[in-house]
Length: 289
Ligand code: C2E
Ligand code: MG
Ligand code: MG
Ligand code: MG
Image 1 (cartoon, protein in one colour):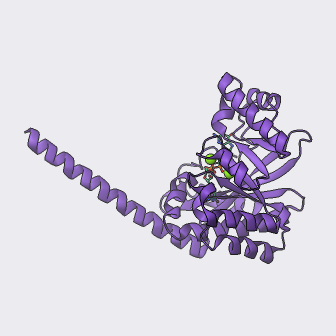
Image 2 (image 1 turned 30 degrees about the vertical axis):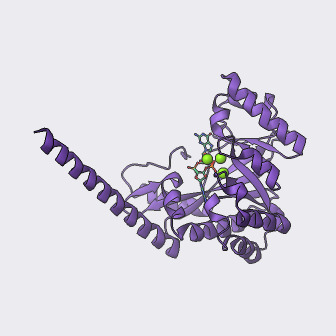
Image 3 (image 1 turned 90 degrees about the vertical axis):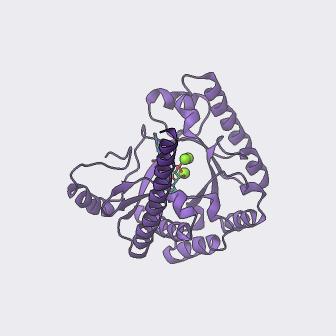
C-alpha cells in the first residue's frame, strides 16, 4: 500500500510540474501578445510626496496587466517570468515610453520613476531604450528616474556599472528601491551615483511599533542627509506610520496613506469597461479607487 501511495504521490508531483510549466508557457504567450498589441497593458502612477512642501515630487510608474480570460495579474507574478526571457526588454521599453509621454501630459514639473530590475541592466538594450523614450517624447532626462532593485550581483557587474554611469551622464536619476532588503545596499552607495534612497515598506510598516524598524529608517534617513539626497519611505499606510517616518527624518513619503496607484484618465475609461464586463470587480490588490 505504502509503495503505491508513494508512486501516486510522485505521479501527482510530475503532473504538478507539467501543469506549472504549461501555465508558464501560456502566460509567456499571452504576455508576448499583450506587448505586441498593447492590449490589456496599463501603467498606473503613484505619487511620492515631498514632506516639507506637501508637493508631488515624483510619480512612480507601476505596470498593470489584464490578462485575457483571466483577469488582473500582479507584476510580482509576471515580471519574474518576463525576466527569464526577452520579454523584460519589451516590457521595459513599453513602460519607459508610456511613462515619458504621461509625464509630459501632466504638465507639471514632477518627475516620473520607472522600475528596472537588475536583469534589465547590462543587456545592451537598456541605455538605447531610455534614449529612445526621451528622444521620442522630448522629456528632459532630468525628469526621469530609474528605480533599481537590489540583486546580489548588481554592484559588481561591470556592464551594469557601465549602464548606470551612462544613464547618470545623460542626466537621468537613479533611485535605490527597496533599500535595506537586498544584498548589497551599501556597496551600491559606494560604487555608483545614487540620487535617491527608497526605504523598503517592511521597515516602514513597523516604524511606529518596533525600535529595530525605527532605527533602520533613521539610519537610512541619516545616510541620505549626509549624501545630500532625498530619502523616501515606501508603503506608508497610516497616519501613525507617516508621523514616525517624518520623526525619523525621511524627506519624502509614498503609500496608500497618500494615494493608491491610479490609472491615467485615458486608461480609466478602458479599465472601467473591462471591470464592468467582469462579474466581480476585483482589481489589482490595493488599487481600489
Ligand atoms: P516597488 O517598486 O517597490 O513598488 C511598490 C509596490 O508597493 C507597488 O506594488 C505598489 O502598488 C505597492 N504599494 C504602494 N503603496 C503601498 C502601501 O501603502 N501598502 C502596500 N501594502 N503596498 C503599497 P506593485 O505595483 O504590485 O509592484 C510590485 C513590484 O513589481 C514593484 O515594487 C516593482 O519592483 C515591480 N514592478 C512594478 N512595475 C514594474 C515595471 O514596470 N518594471 C519592472 N521591472 N518592475 C516593476
Ligand atoms: Mg519601485
Ligand atoms: Mg520599493
Ligand atoms: Mg518592492
